[in-house]
Amino acid sequence: MAEKRFKLLALDMDGTVLTEDKLISPENRAAMLEAVDAGVTVMFSTGRGVQNVLSYVDDLGLKSPLVTVNGGEVWRAPGSFMNGIWWILS
Image (cartoon, rainbow, N blue to C red; front, side, top):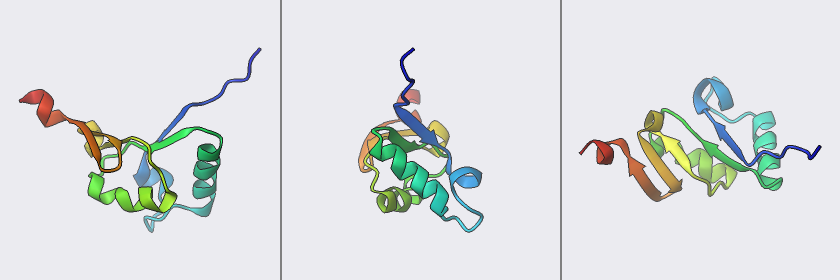
């Protein structure tokens, strides 16, 4: 049987990846970067607005898609907006 290989790791931030101090723990950081090095797309899917996510994305060097505002915005990559719920509703 072929080994399963993950292609995507979509992570929540608050209460999941971030500590109570709103930092990425060294263990989480290492695991995320290990996944990136293994060819896995690591992305955030969060209730936060993009302006409250970008510092973490920049710190990790991620160029992956983002899902923000509880799914209300989808970004192809940081700075590259793809779609938002208000476009669908109008």
